[in-house]
Length: 251
Image (cartoon, rainbow, N blue to C red; front, side, top):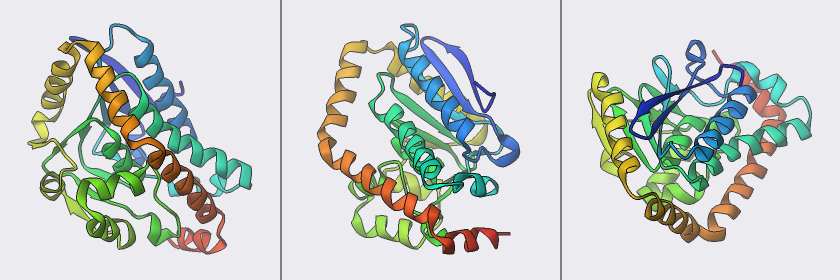
C-alpha cells in the first residue's frame, strides 16, 4: 500500500479502513483505489475481522474524483477504461465481499464518495455532512451501481434530480430518504459506527454472509448491467474534449 488508506483494529472483530488523503478531502486517485481494494480484500481474508468501519481522515469522507489528476486519467482510452473499472471494483469489493461494511461519514461525500456510502450495508453520518453528485455537470457519469441502486432507495424522480441536476442535500434529508441508518453529533460518529459494526461482528457469521449474498444476488444481472453501462458512459465522458474544457475552468 502507498499510505492513501489506513487500517486499524477497533476490537471485537471490527477493522477500521480510512481514506487517507485529507489534504485533498480524500479525493480519488489510482493509488487510493488500489489501496482501498487491497484493504477490503485483506479484511475479507482475515477470520478475526467480522465487520468493517469505512471512514475518511480529516474533514471529509471523500470529495470524489481528484480533478487535479484529470490529465493523467485521460492519458489514453485504455488508461481511462482501466481507471473507471477500478472505481467500479471498489463497489464490487464493498457489495460482494464477505465482510459487512458500516460507513462513518463526516463532511463531504461527493460523487464517488457518495456512491461508496450508498454501497455500505449501513451508513452513519455526522450532523454537518453534505452530499451531491457533480458528475453530469462536468460531462461525466455516475458509477458505483447508483443508476440501479438509487431509484430503488429513494424513487426514480428524486434519483433523477440528484444525478442530473446535482442537487445538494444534507444528512437529515439523507436520513429521511433512507440513504442513512442514523445521524449523530460529530463527536459521536466513530463510537456509533463502531458500536454498530461490533453488533454485526457479534452475529453468527454464516447467516450474515448468506444474507449479504442473497441481497446482492437479488439485484442479479440488473446491477451488473447497470455498472457496465455506467462504465461505458463514464469512459466516454472522460474522453470527451468538452469535459476537459469544463474541468480546466474549475476554480
